[in-house]
Length: 505
Image (cartoon, rainbow, N blue to C red; front, side, top):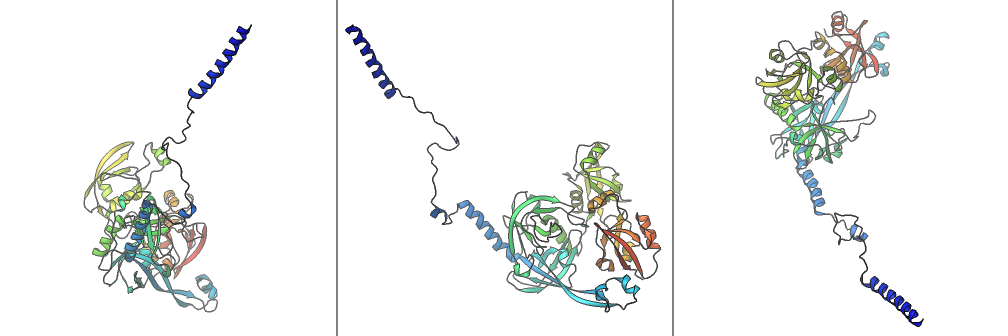
């Protein structure tokens, strides 16, 4: 019995000893949980004291980025100028009922005397010095209505300027001042500019007191078109750098301080004229050729293909059973034009010009206009779902009209306006419904009386007592005009109203 108890007690002791030996010497390693495998295991997160953060310590890369902006502003500001224009505006007033002075019908009905009043109007814009000789690049709309043009430099010196040349089709102008020690901007390459790049806009928003304001943003998009109603050549750089009224004609520069664009337009909601985060600039590569022609020849000489074109949208592509949505659809071929001689036909889609893929009508228009007159260019068109190669010898764009096919009869010579058929495509381009009737104003002679009451994009729906549906109605109505004045019914966006135009003798 005692022997059994001893064996049992010994077994218990051995079990206890074995447990302690196992737990003490054979204990397994604890399992590790890895939260961030890319971070070194031994690295520990440090908590930075608040006092250290408030010292304004910056990383070297951020400091270099900041210094780049400072350097750009310092180097480019002397090349940017503030432009103010002054013009005397005459308005017809009624000395008896001043509030109704601009209403010719009211004056005639009551047989009231006619009078005129004068007031001075000023406009503000910006410009960029591009040559030590005093040449300044700006927007046409900044200087076109100015009789007196004043330029103020960064050092606050002021000079009178003369207009060297203007190009309404691109909204560019070149003016000149007589000054010494000017610092011209360094011209960059807008074709090399990429979406997402940093850019700075420099100009005089709202007031002379805000001259040489510098704002920063990125290139939001390139090749924007159909931005300005009535403009012919558009391929805008879009940016979110703050651009406001007064910035027109100012500089858009890249991170190297090179001039890549001329600030021209802003997007608004109709109620607010200030910046909404979308601005547009004319690419400097387009401006270079225009500027050279204006300085050397006083006008822009452009190559001409002789077609009326429109975009290839999804519905058009489906209807034509083609895969691409790029290119330019030929809606009209001008008689005796380079296009007709080369064999281009209505319904063709030009997808390649001179070895370059055509993105849209604006792209093709710019490619053609920047080409040398008389040169033979290769074209690739889609015709009947098949690609065809053609050759075209470019001509010179006629000065009088955008395309020789837009016949306006007496319209431009007598009333100072040019009009064209209101096709569904044109209606869409100007923001009208496809069922609107009439002819649309495309150009206005700025020296005519019509310039004070009409705008490009207005629809003429009635002349006198004759309803206008198409160009034939318009021409017939003009031929039947008699008397000193004609009453014209205009539709402008959602408004409809009459205007009275004087018939030149």
